[in-house]
Image (cartoon, rainbow, N blue to C red; front, side, top):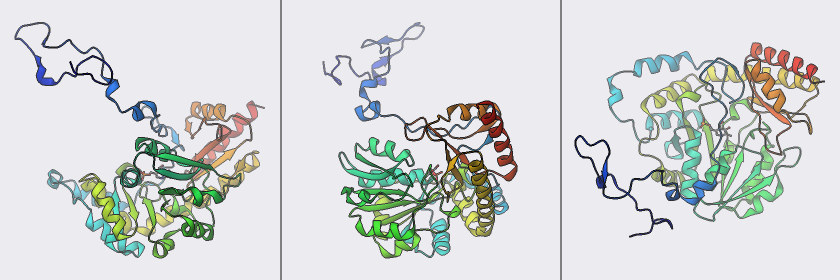
Length: 387
Ligand SMILES: Cc1ncc(COP(=O)(O)O)c(C=O)c1O
């Protein structure tokens, strides 16, 4: 008998299972398996923790300030384009490389089609990047705390994560460039702090990094300046954009990677054949055609963000200057789990992280002014009752 993963239990294929008509139980050539063969799962996967997304409750309506979604609807042009696209063409595969969307994005961002790759959300692009560049033992460096999906993706590739703590002010840690990593990730603005280092320091980082510098700009439309100009200066910079936040299209799952055509060519080999569906392509094109809609919403969110930041500071929180559509509020040394739970009981969801570096924080997505008023009213009550 062949040995499988150190046990003597054989692998049963479906063809080895024979059923006899009328029999109450299956007749098996080999003993029945009573438990799934978890020993066949790659050890790396068995040992790692999966990424934990924010809660997406389907049961009741919350004021949802936990996943950095946009409180405003997508452009009416997006809705109209989608309605028009819901027809029998859905039986056909989409364009595998979404050239119409690449061309529209090229026009909007001043690039060429060959510099753009479309993803099923920017998460898909992060996966493609990891699968393209990272094999067992390869180094991936990033400052932490940051978007925790990076950890999960490095673990899946059996890469080595070089996690460099941010200084207290969330400026760029100077050691980042010296890590000799194949990939360096910079979340720009950073999640969950919302902070954005000056472009000059990102430029210096780009000069020093020997590998590929991936600048994750999922939240950049809420910020004062983008690192897009660096793309024209450095062939080893890759920039990621998302339609989920500023364009209010989290449900459609679309993202863009910008980079040197030769790198994009390699990434194209790794993506799923039809990674972006027909409707998502159409929605993203329509969203870019109504860029002004996105800008108006992003500007409203920036104004609400200032008000929220100010109010939280008045309540005694340390709030980092955010350039994103969320703020991180800290009460040094005091767990914010009761606050998170108390808000949830009052129908308001915010994001709480139990890790030692963030347990005293809540991350709050900037909602509408009305939503933020309700959040602040509930927060005041909770703080008053907790003394
Ligand atoms: C920093 C960062 N990058 C990427 C993503 C993924 O966005 P998408 O919805 O485009 O997959 C998120 C989502 O929250 C994020 O916070």
